[in-house]
Length: 99
View 1 (cartoon, rainbow, N blue to C red):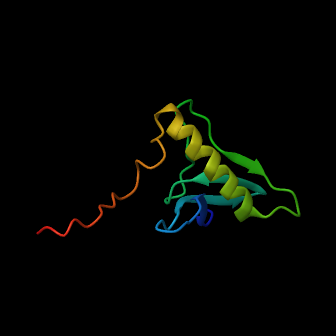
View 2: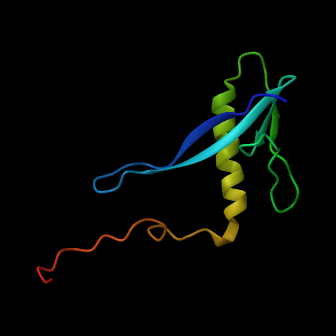
View 3: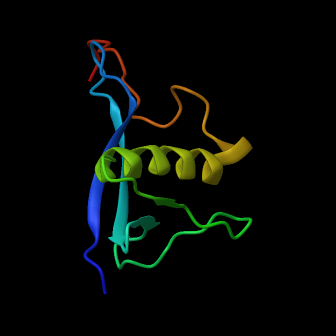
């Protein structure tokens, strides 16, 4: 079984008061083909049953391609049910001075 590698991709950039957001992806490379997987090394599939693979060229950066596939897979999986911006993080309350 090929080694499972991990990649982290930026989903939202940091800004004042917000640390940013990343997504984790896993992948294997076997016989020159990169496959997006889960942590156990099983290929991931979207709701349509499509797997996410790409044949690597000699000068390709596997980690960079895995990052692009991770973003693509995440977008497909979230689909129209994606959380609107600002609704998936912590709620920050201002201090009122009351106990």
